[in-house]
Length: 217
Image 1: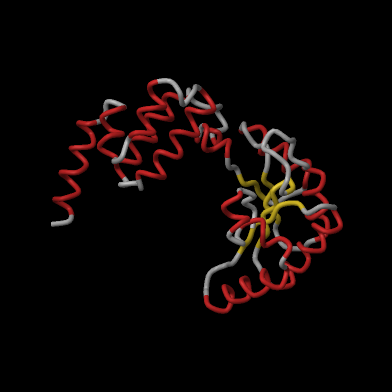
Image 2: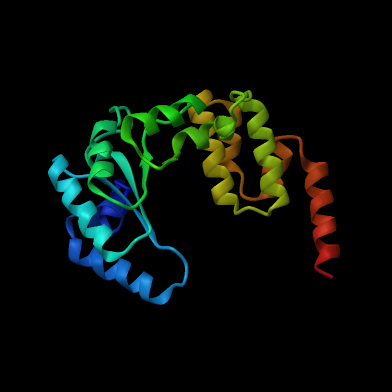
């Protein structure tokens, strides 16, 4: 229930559910009734801190195992600072674990947001898309190295090409520009084979494909 993008809102999904507590209740109770694994959910901040706390308490009463809170409101933009203090209000009001989310771009930010909010743990979105080595206590690796390793992992795991392209575009938009030749080539790519050729991993792609066929008999 955190996505504020227009396709989610118009479809009654994501952040559109924040104003429908009865629907939230129905979804979460149905999940809990039919699953034997922990059920968690994620919300964004509402118009006022008391509104957010009230919704969080209602969700807690349903019996979820943890609640993730993104520190922005629906109309906030990514450039607007995340309101860690309002996440702290939710943490103080609940007894279940709260997962803090928003503006975590470096490893040091993980402890900073935990200290500022009292949250049990941290969720990273854009920071991880831009450079997955954000989780390393030794500092981030050069993004070009991370990008190449991501391409190899996508080949190895036969990742969905749309997902692979999305992550590559996020990296390129943040560190470079999609209008440069690399970005345009990623956009035009239709298969993992195209991606492998673009990044000089065609031999590795063929090796993985051959061995995958052998494993599949």
